[in-house]
Image 1 (cartoon, rainbow, N blue to C red):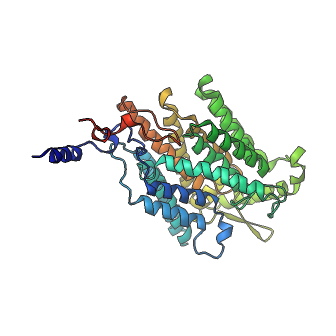
Image 2: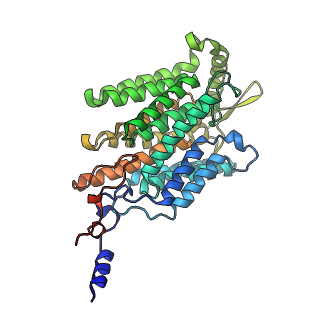
Image 3: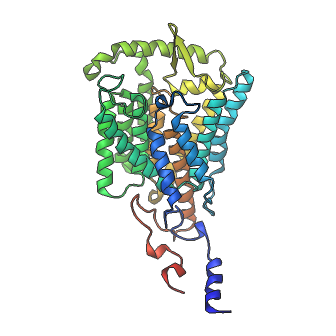
Length: 415
């Protein structure tokens, strides 16, 4: 056997994927498909459904669907098993809504197809088919571009003096900025990138004049800054208190200070909130089916503002239990990781979703929340793999290229 044949055979026998330190996050040699999927995630984050009113499928769904389709041709990382409970709970969301729709004799085809696609998005991120670094790139660039777009077009929309940009409304803008900002920060390492995302994102959140988004931004920053300086139960109590307070906002007169002009919208919110509770009380166990989270106030139809109640409207207490269990298990397992393996910004992205869900409409089943869940599942799987293999290197930064020492022996020219 010639030397060339021996080398070829040895390369064929080299361990693959997770068996090779440095390949855990599929960042040794970023592929074109990874960059393409990142761009799709960027535009999906910026594509508001109002810009595709004439299309049978919302533009954000089309772009995320293209990303999922492209990721289907990428081999998942082997040796990094996903938490089974995360997979089954994610699939249970569209699955139970299908059952609820059948029980209510409605089709809900478009809604079910959209949620099925988002569930697949979670799974392709969690499996490594869509690299978490690509997801972080998409999130970070979307925050910066979306912020600049919104600040540059301030006042050129139906919401006077409030930032909208490409997100359609200030509430959706606040959700995307807070959650995607946390996802990006989880992997950003360079100071310039962190400053750019922080300044642009914080300015844009303030410009939305969304009180819930501002509360969410403050609480996620406090979660990361305080970190391990206080016990976990103290942070949980504080976050729980903030969530309770945010839940009471529609029922209180908070139109003071810079929000003095919001008295009319607060009165409408209170009426919508009463109508929401009346709707969810009709079919409390299994809900009204997919796409039913709407209510009628004085002849006008409104989407639910409370995402917790929206889950109950569509899938009853069962769907709410599925989603809350998914988030509770994610946070519980993330907080139990050793200090060297934790990423507080990933925890913060989930907390941001829980806070925003109180008043910002579609939150739990929106693309930013599903991206955060996928990234959290992926980080949990990778951390467990590193705990089993202490020789695995730390994760690379958002803009950091592969380390030569992490490559295969033959790739570095040694035998």
